[in-house]
Amino acid sequence: MIPWAEANVHVLSHSHQRGSLVFDYMSVYETARGPAVFRMHEHVERLIESARLIGLPLDPGAAALEAAILETVAANPGAPAVKVSAYFPSIEVDVVPLDPHVSVAIAAYDPRRDIVEPKGRESVPRPKAVKLWIEKQRRNRRDDIVPPQAKSSANYASPMAAKWEARRRGYDEVLLLDADGFLAEGPTTNVFLVDAQGTLLTPPEDKVLLGITRSSILEIARDEGLPVKEQPLRPDDLLGASEAFLTGTTAGVWPIASADDQPIGSGEVPGPVSRQLSERFQRITAGHDAVFASWLTFVRAS
Image 1 (cartoon, rainbow, N blue to C red):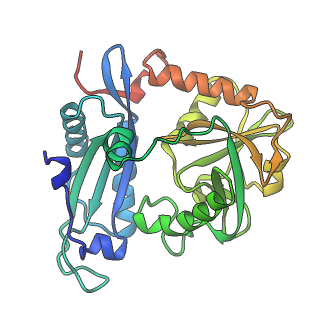
Image 2 (cartoon, rainbow, N blue to C red):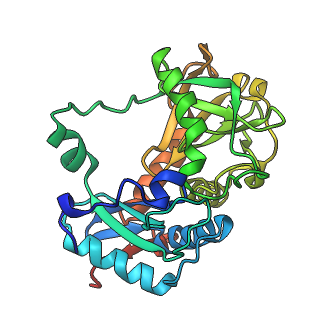
Image 3 (cartoon, rainbow, N blue to C red):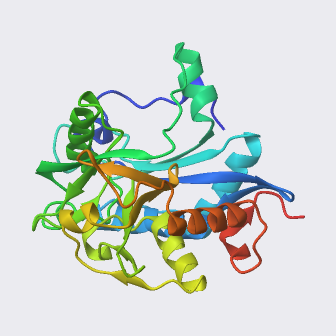
């Protein structure tokens, strides 16, 4: 365990200069049985796969990583977030590091308490519904460069630039298209829409980051008896949807109020499907749903 102020990496490290860091981010929920990490196994599997996709020789296996995550959360009571990073810490001059050692760092923290408030900033509340901009110029992560399934720091440069511009123009979030002009995802979110027949639609997994909340919502929807399809979607499909929402570890189920200044559906936000899925998701994360109880890994066994 290292104090917050001492958790440093050299400015010339390979991870800093070449964007070779991979990471995963998960939530910790308070329940009647104490704090629990949401879908920790799936997050760790995704971290290991991200390292494989970009070539990081990650040594710790899933069991060691999971034990370290639980130990870190236990040492930081009240932390609602955990970020696990794997990176080359060595100072390097070449694209391929001479020192292939990969370090793993785990931080359990409260973004507001540990980051926002110490810098004298005010917490900006997340809008209840999204004012969305569909990005027309920059495309989403491409499989022939860095696969979209790799949660690598290098994969966030283009989405960052797109979201920055959208924020300047008064939008809450940006939605990127893939190389063929189909809907892909937000910088840290996946997108869902409900068509006129009541079917829940989302882009296929080969074009997007495999969001843990995304997969959770798909499983919840099927358990609720909702028709679900994963298929390519055009921007017009979103603009003509009866309702739509984003999903993410931080966002949860986040209803979309408008896209490109056009209201989505009837204007009811959240729509009935979004509300149904959000309420079920909240019951699960609070530990009140036996069907998906396995999604919670408790920090201390009761």
